[in-house]
Length: 93
Image (cartoon, rainbow, N blue to C red; front, side, top):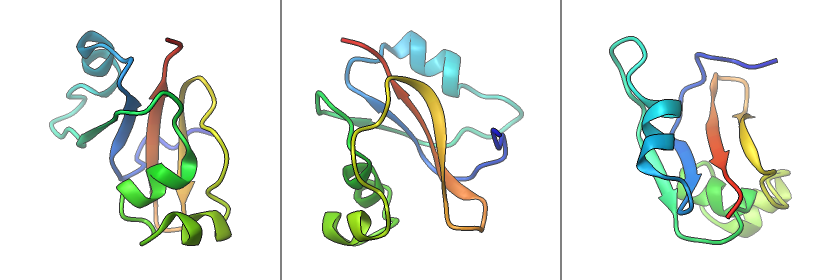
């Protein structure tokens, strides 16, 4: 189930266009969360967790289940039980 009030950065890979970013993460109610553009071909959960400062290292992130590749498309991943997490957009090349 999607949590539309998830607090945290929005993450995209560098293949996303500015139009995609504006459409998916634009102003919807007065506040806009930051968008993190990652310059990698394949988004990995451990890299996102470190970039978003959920964990201090990739090893720590992997130990806590943030491992593997981010699936293609648009979605979310929750972090902990305090309503934090990330929305991601991982388009095909």
